[in-house]
Structure formats: C-alpha cells, structure tokens
Image: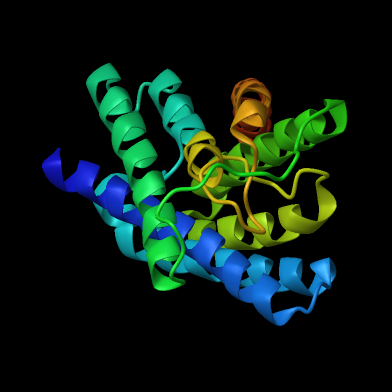
Length: 227
C-alpha cells in the first residue's frame, strides 16, 4: 500500500510539474502567441503521461487522477481505504508539482490562478474531456492493455485542442492549477465547476462503457444453441 500511495504521489507530482512548467516555458517563448504556447504545453503533457503510466502503472495502476480512482472503486477494483488514500496523495502530489515548477522558474511557490475558466462551455468541455479519458482507459484495458500509456497520452494531447476547457479532466490537476498564476492556471473560484463536470463525465463514461463493453463481450460469444 505504501508503494502504491507513493507512486500516485510521485506520478501526480511529475504530471503537474510538467503541465505547469511547460506552460511557463512555452508562454515565455511564444511571444504572446497562445496557440504556440498551447502546442508546447500539449506536447509535454502527452509525452509525460506516456512515461509515467508506463513506469508507474505496474506499481499503483497509474491513476494520478481522483476521477479515475473513483471509477476503479466503483468497479470494485480499489478498496474505499485505497480510494481515500489515492485522492489525498494525488492532491498533495499535484500541489507539490506546482511548487516544484514554480521553484524552477524562480516564482512564488504558490500563487492563486487568475485565468477565468467558467461557464457552461467550459463545464461541458470538462465533462467531455473526462468522459473520453475514462472511455479510453476502460476500452484500452479490455482490448489492448499494453497500449494504455500511449492511448491516454494521445487522448489528452487531442483533448487539449478539441475541448473548450483544454482538457484538465482531473480534479487533482485542477486543484494544483488553481495555485499557479501562469498560462496553465485557473481561478480557485472556478475549480468547483470543473470538479463537478469531471465527476459527472467520469460516472457517465463508467455507465456507458459498462453497457458497451459487456454488450461487446456478449455479442462475440458463440451461440450455444446453434447446431
């Protein structure tokens, strides 16, 4: 249990450090071009997800995300005690990741985010982003478990660009990004709306994929009445 918890802490730390640090770096080099800054932020995030899930997946499952941990709890693949432990260390790891990124760029360790991210468009974007993330994980685990690190990295890379919210899709990352006044930040007052949308998206994906994947299994089974 201690190794799993530390893996979740460490993975979330490096995930957030990459999101925040690459956002600071990209914004500083983009000369005000938000599209270029977002591209730099996107590539770094997709790449680190592949690395972290590949390296830490065998230790903890590489959730790094309370919404994903909730889904696995509801699937009875994670105990309630582990769910609580995962959520706590993911939140702590995320905040530590923000602090580490700020320290590397000589910024105050924690600053309230100022980027306005609110309204129905952003909330729908977060619900879609999290639905798609959970869908990707569950379908990948069923059909191509070895490909999950790449699938998740590619999905989040795409999600940065096709969702209105730039695909946070993660309550712990949302919390951590509420304490960076940088390109990747979010106002703390906007975080609850993102959290609600993320949980709704994750639960919807669990229900849909449970029906869809169970149906696919039934459809592929041989007809015992034949012949």
